[in-house]
Figure 1 (cartoon, rainbow, N blue to C red):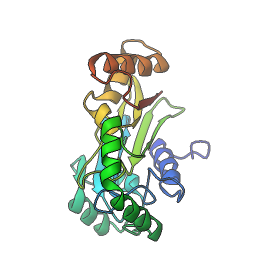
Figure 2: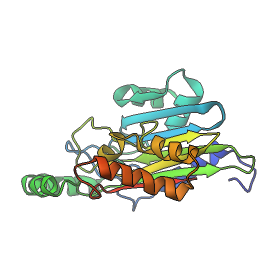
Figure 3: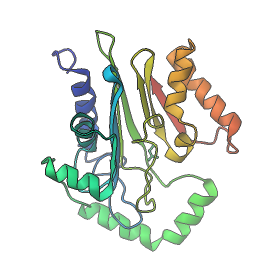
Figure 4: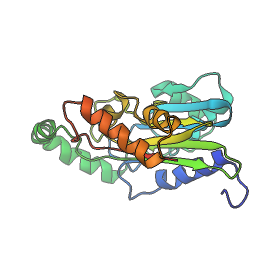
Length: 239
Ligand code: GLY
């Protein structure tokens, strides 16, 4: 997109749409793992460095591209974050592409999970980890120096319905400061959003740290503060 002269926002949105469209990705888009009620609920956000603009959606089901809905929130409303039914009504009004709430394969997997729920919950609680999930965080530096970023996920597998993770939270799953840099997070959202992780990475870059060092220092700082130490399963990308 960038080589073809597209905008940074187009590049971020289209890049994330590739992953959201991947039927083999169990963590992003409608092929993601369902929540405990058997529904896939998606979270996403997008940020534009120029103008320091942001848009986000949380707990959206039945739409293929939450990143595009987030962009529309940013570009056409005075709000930053729409969730649940309100976000779905917004998506419907704007004609966004719908998709299945769950696929037959997901339904079968959910039924299997439901049957083994007690054992799985006990195991996951003991390990302090979700059963399986991840995220895409994508950041872009344009030739003119402008920065853009986006983040999208189906979130923690078999989460409590209504649970929203770090991915659509500005400063947690994503942060873009056009004067400094951009950062995004993947991993267990609960462990990122309690520390405003992506904001922290950008703030370390503001202090002069190289992006990689900023990510490492953020993880070190969180690990120092968190009772779980390094067993947090969080990751950052920064530019
Ligand atoms: N990092 C994605 C989530 O925890 O929902």
